[in-house]
Image 1 (spheres, rainbow, N blue to C red):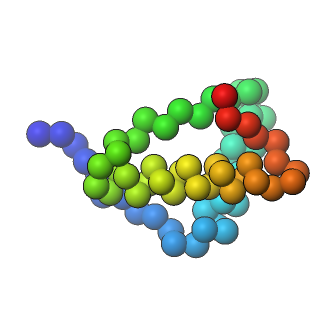
Image 2: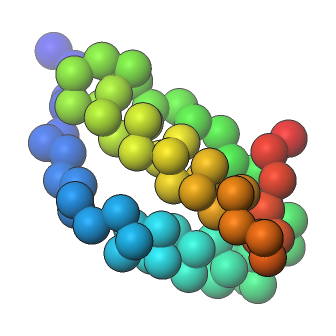
Length: 71
């Protein structure tokens, strides 16, 4: 049996983007350059989480003043 916690997602895209951006900025401030790797299972509830993650990063990359890039 594999552990699969329930996924909670806020439906407020703007709030999700802001929260992710704040988290990324704090992480970079603490550790320097970071690499994001999506290891989320692409099935069931995890699939929704992975899709949202990609959309949030794409949203940040589409902003004129973004400081992020995909490697």
